[in-house]
Image (cartoon, rainbow, N blue to C red):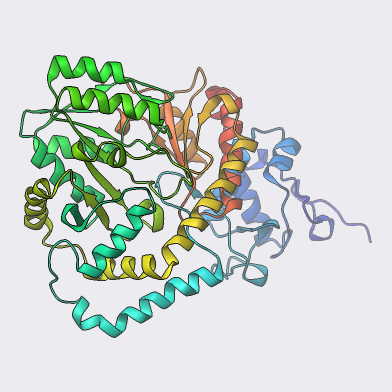
Length: 478
């Protein structure tokens, strides 16, 4: 018996894997909503059955003569309604609406909207490493009573020995008298800024920089003066000019895999900045958040100019954002004291549980295993970026897990961010990173967190299509 078409969509017997061409005109809605409505209707009437593999977004866009982003947005809407799921390495499948918790064949994870906004390292998914990390938590329970008490400020001797080992792996060779263990890099930066400057004083920073430093400076009543940058980072000559004009108390730098531009200051550039800082008696505040991610980084400012550098190495970007811990190295034992006093007054102490976990991971090698995973996974994701995004539109580092996209003519950062949100993709415009002047038409894209490679690939495909077209074409949904 020959099957017949109904309502512009094939009957169940005519739908083969990867083939589905709905009639969108009948819905009288924007195309992306019509795709979701057609899916819902075909599932409700039995034309599409649970487990049916749908066409790829590109194939459906070609079949319907639609923009790729429109189809992607329709699939995102259908995913939100619990109609479809993406299975890693397999494709997009119809699910049973009565079973919203269904995870797909063989427990394959679903592929849904992707958040590119949060700058997190990729989360370890290797079973052996996950088990190793989990075992550490269980082992800490044997000392739980002690870990629930107040601890001496700045870390125990064992904690400091572990911290010194961690820092030495970055080339920072210091002693306990100059070291403080802090509850995260943010608190360390806050305390250092409060000691090197007073309300009304000036701090120099990169023109495009970590947003946290802007918030801290504003809270402390400090004037933040921006320094121009090129693809290698801060311009030393501009720093020297600022020193003669505004007499800054310190310069804040995020010199390795910089957030957000991904720039890394070369040794030559670092030495030029140090020469200026010494000439004008300016302290250097080095935020080395990605200290262990890059396998062969230039020497740190703390290594090249320890006598004028406040070095802050948080572990959140290397081991996990929830591990709020940082190691602070002051220029001298004497300069450590006022910073310690400020930290103690503001934070009391670093969490003993977080500190104990970090110490255990550093000592037993788990931390290094996590770092190695982050390096390898970040490199794999950067290869995906290189294969999908137009090379002229972005800057990145092969070992980093974020990308800085300079938008083509016609795009504004707000329009591009809005375009991403419409397809279930979060990106961050340049505004929060800009110290002064008009923010550039650029966005930051983060590749870490819980997202899988397939999710990253899907999101990048959508953004790549947007970058290749005009904003007017990308926003055509009806």
